[in-house]
Length: 205
Length: 333
Image 1 (cartoon, rainbow over the protein chains, first blue to last red):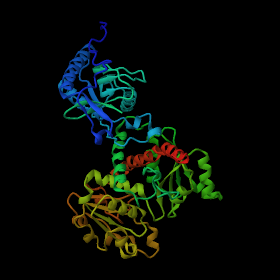
Image 2 (image 1 turned 180 degrees about the horizontal axis):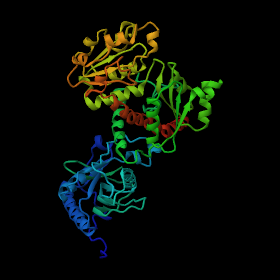
Image 3 (image 1 turned 180 degrees about the vertical axis):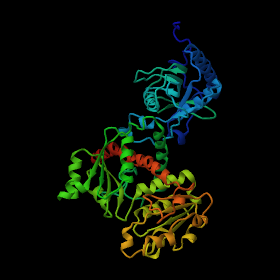
Image 4 (image 1 turned 90 degrees about the vertical axis):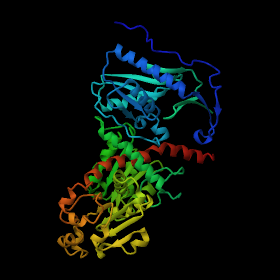
């Protein structure tokens, strides 16, 4: 049965010029003097995560996928994946990916200072995989994550779940499930802090 | 700091890796943390990451080695670098080419990193001092001076079993006098904050004034030296020492300094036993100990690959930045 355009694509926060008018604080130790506002607080993110869980459930049913393997990308993606993993009641253990060794900017900026071990608890050959990350911007992280994944094996399919999708894509990569969406100036960054409470910050120079 | 072969670049990042001497605890910890990340590469179906694709690494081994050379080669290949293994004994050096000419020729082939092993102390420093500015050098053992990557893989193995260096008693047993491994280990243990380092050897194989030079305690009795140790590191006894009157015989050495289960009983119950390899069974240690539950000798070999991947990628990762930095300095910024 051909499914209509994905109903689970909800429009979040698009082109609202006032969206960073929230509570302003500057935390110099955290962001080197950059200003950051809370864009989405813990309660808002909780709501978004429940919506994402429902959307993922719908999508898994549509595709008739059972026992998917969920994999979070360090660090923010892991926090989101842990929540989705619990809320979906998945039985397979959660996997973790660090994409530092697959980044495309090694020759420009050198090795990433904080590499965490990747851990895929079970083989991914012929498995349906859900890759989870916090923010999708250029798409380069997901490109790297797919490369890591395929060095571990050949999954049957890969779905992409993203907490916040923003403008600025540089690669042909699109998410399957999205919590929030926003068009932002390229100098403005979204940053997830956590794991408790989870807050989505908007960092601008 | 600004000598031509300083190990660190202007931002304090690793450029060469020649000796542990002078490196901070932060930098050594950074290397160990990076190596943690590289461990998982061995679990992948494709045991390779594209980090150093397009880089050329030359293994320059002027002295024989199997384990060190193969783990360096494997580490470079897992980083997707191109590896040249130069068998120096059958190459141009044997035909009379000088070390510097060999170096210049390899530089002309756009080699980015040299891994150097040489029987003469200071050989890696010499090459680093004369290499082109964008080239990195890693010391894979020079004379009886240093073997820093071996020391770092030993530190990595220790940390995986005993996470807190500041609570440890470490015993190093064997030919301390000729051992570059022991020198690098003592420096690394000290830098990482190990409070008690015991070195145990016959009087003929103990360097003079090692207590003052390295801040260690000297023992000539194995049982006393390993008492309550958390880590026991055995060093290889080179057979040629037997002929130089430093040791009467292999049998006598084993009788006095060989590690047996009985002698190990004085160490802590959860002590680990290490050896850089290759082992002389029945000389440095009993087979029972080498193959026993406390032995982490084979783990050291696997860890060596991850640690060498970390050090190589840290050296290679800063090369472009160094270029930018030098340009900035040249332009007076």
